[in-house]
Image 1 (cartoon, rainbow, N blue to C red):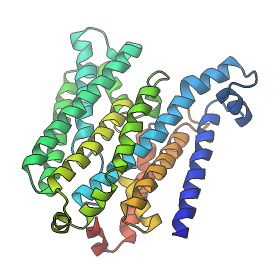
Image 2 (tube, helix red, strand yellow):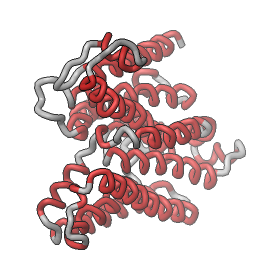
Image 3 (tube, rainbow, N blue to C red):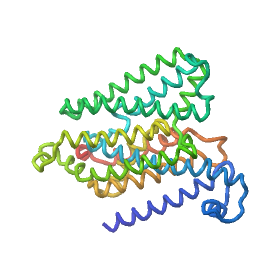
Image 4 (tube, rainbow, N blue to C red):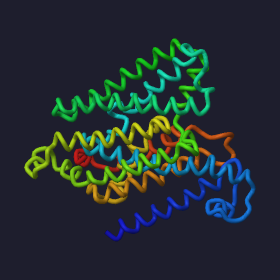
Length: 345
């Protein structure tokens, strides 16, 4: 118990430190004192610094914080539902559905409208976000409908993976018939970025996630019962079909919203639950749910900071950073566990 409290305090302090560093560091370094004055409307800082903070770094930092927490929660739910250590937010094809929706908008825009969507500014950004949400929601509805008919989690997981393959195949065909500029715009979107959420969009994003993340905490008892196995959970009065329905819906919607605003972010949802199980030595979701929320937020802030470190021209693709950090975490955790421990998920 004492160890867990110390870990929670350490992670929370890390979030505040990383939040400040994300605001301060970049191609242009801004003193922390000036950042404090800008955030609280004090002092007389230059308009350039104010624009950098309010129009770029603050929305990007808040997006990374919320997206990291959301994806980590989604990953924890998926691993619990399917009792599979390699399950993640994208395993049911939700990210692929969002990518397919964006592909239809970006890759066909040049051929249909005669103008590349990547050049349409705010209108283009809104169209991409809406298309991603629609694509993800369509796949989610298919998965939810199938989950009501299929009893086995393994079958549902395989169907989700197959839907992802179908979406990838369609995207490949669209790329083949699209012009180079549209393909480049789509590839850049697919690399993921916390900087895609503008100053005006960040409030909507935060509001949506502020609703979805607390709803996930209402499923803590349900997820703990799922860990006991289907037979024990039913004996304790849990309606497995209904419980799986709500858990899948919550996880899928979080993944859909994050993908719509940030692109498909990989490895955070897969790596963070493993890391937290190891650090906190617990499978109890009363511990794991707040743990993955805070750890996911901290890790996303760290990845965003690395991607924008001074010395880099522009910013590195966030997926490259999350993969470089997340993959070693998963590998080290899996190697550090005995084979029979993997079955507890």
